Image 1 (tube, one colour):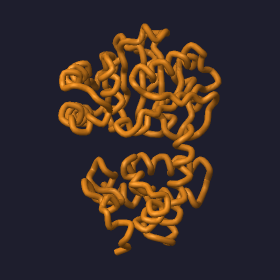
Image 2: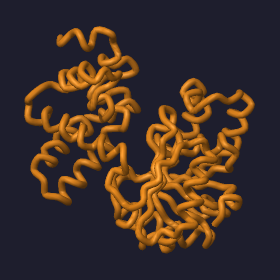
Image 3: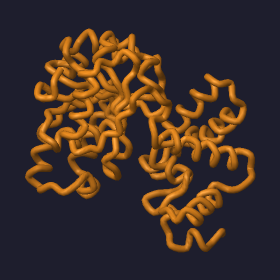
Length: 302
């Protein structure tokens, strides 16, 4: 499929990333359908998109009229057939489980038009892990977004069976929705930024899980030396602790790595208490006013 043929986008998963990706596509003139099996998630997504005008301003400059037009271009549904009708490009943002991703793509392969391009927003897996399950491996690659209202960087990563036409179209699509594509030539776990970031987060979790230093002091150390506004545990809160846990736990089990298992267990303590990060108001820190955002955080270890 050529870029000119892409008019309608299907977002699989109405979580934080699905909401952000869906909005930025609609803002740039595309018709968008957000699909989720949960009506509650869909209602939350619609509420966020319709009411978070202050946050939406971080996506770039646009007028109130453009915002209203974007909102009107987004539909929400839990009906798979309705979601797949006439879509040209699919982007998936479901939990980091290759089996689950493969299952969902297989389901929508039977429902979407034959020419529809499939993309995954996976943050830690590689597309070849479930490319065959898509039923259209030549029309499949990764299109990975970071926090959309903070950065325009996206990763475009093929698997060995991705066609050159698909790759070129996805790269051009990323540009047309105002993003800056980082095009990888081959599969690489964690893309570019996430590969570096995961090393940082793993190190921070290892220090905390072994009781070497507190969460606050680990962040304080990183922020104080690197002169950043946020540390590794604040970053995990922004990612979402459920996502951080699932990624850490998945690779711990794949690699049978005891250190990684301890890291996963450390995050799980918070997940089990419902402390999932910014979206629930509490994770490693409490929101909307986390202690790391206070001017005295670096200078005080109390």
